[in-house]
Length: 406
Ligand code: FAD
Image (cartoon, protein in one colour):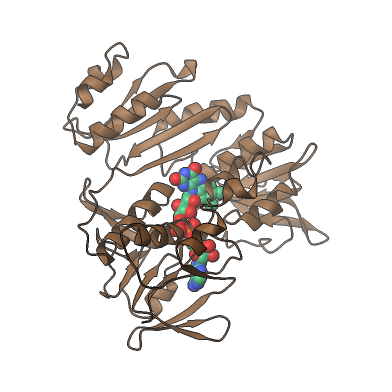
C-alpha cells in the first residue's frame, strides 16, 4: 500500500503527520521536505533565534524520536518536482518516483522578490528559512546598518531584533504607514512611534529604485526620489508568494494559492492542501483568502487529517496571529474586511491597549491587542460569535469585556 505522502515538511506538513497518527491512521506516512531539517517553527527566526536566544531544539516542532516512534518516514533535502495524478505518483528531485494513495500538499510560501536591479548582489537577503536567519544574523551587530525593504511584520520584527543586537536599522516602506495591508491606522501609528523611539529610522512613502553595490556587495538603497540610503546589508521583506506551481502544473485549481474547502480538499479528491500554499474559505466573513500564520497551518492540518480519517471537519476557528517586537506582544484575531469603525480600548501611551474593528452594523470583525491578552481573548470570542457591540461599551475600559463575550 503506497500510503499518505506529505509534500513539504514545514509547520503544516509536520502537524498533518502528527494529527494523522493522533486520529488513528495506521498506514504509511512519508514526509518529503526540500529543506534539510525536520519540521521547525519559523516565528522565532525573526525574533528569539535571530537574537540568539533560542536553540535548535527550541526551534524544532517535535524531537526526532517523535517521527520514529510514530512511524513517520522522512525524506529531507528532497523536492517534489511533479505530480502525475493519473498514475498517483510523484517525481522527486533525486530522480526517483514515489507512489501515493493520498497526497497532502504543504509547500508553504516563498519570499516575494523585489524585481529591481541589484537584487542579486551579495548581502541582499530574504527571511524564510533557518538558513536565511543564520545569514541575516551574520550581518547584524554593533556598528552595522541594515536596510529593511518593507514595513510588514517580518521587517518590523527584524528591525527590533537588529536594535537588540546593537545594529542600526532603516525601514523603507512604500505605503504611507507600516503594516498598511494587515493592520489598522491606530496600531500602525503606535508601532511607528515605538520603533522610532528605539532608534529605528522609518522612511514612509519611500519607493526603492535600485540596490547599489560596491565590489559585488550591497552598499546602499537608492530611492525613486533620489535619496541614497547607505547600508551594510539589505533585507527584502515585502511579503510571500504561495508555492502553488506544482499544484497548478498538474491541473489542480489554483491561483494565488491552491483552492481548498473547509476539509482542506483540493479539486482532486485524493489530494489535500494545507498552510501558506492554500487559498481557503473564511466562513465568518463569507469570502476566501490566503492566511499566512501558524494557527492557520495547524487548523488546516487538522482539517486534512480529520477528512482522511473519516472524522467530521473541525469547527472553523477565528483566524489569529501574533507578533513580538521589543517588549510588545501583539495578538490579532479576526480580519478587518471593510471595517466601518475602529474603537480604541485603553491608553496606547500606557503600552497596553486594544483596537476593535467593527462593521457598519457593529459586528466585531477583528481585534488588535498590544500587551492586552484578556482583551485579545474576549475579542476573539466576540468575533467568533459575530457579536454586535456598541462602540462605547468597547471603548469604556472600566467595563469588563468578558461579560459581553459570553
Ligand atoms: P512552511 O513552514 O514554509 O513549510 C513549507 C515547506 O515546504 C518548506 O520547508 C519548503 O522548503 C517545503 N517545500 C516547498 N516546496 C516543496 C516541494 N516541491 N517539495 C518538497 N518540499 C517543498 N506566523 C505566526 O502565526 N506568528 C508569527 O509570529 C510568525 N512569524 C514569522 C516569522 C518569519 C520570519 C516567517 C518566515 C514566518 C512567520 N510566520 C508567523 C508565518 C508562519 O511561519 C507560516 O505561516 C508557517 O510556517 C506556514 O507553514 P507551512 O507549512 O504552510 O509553510
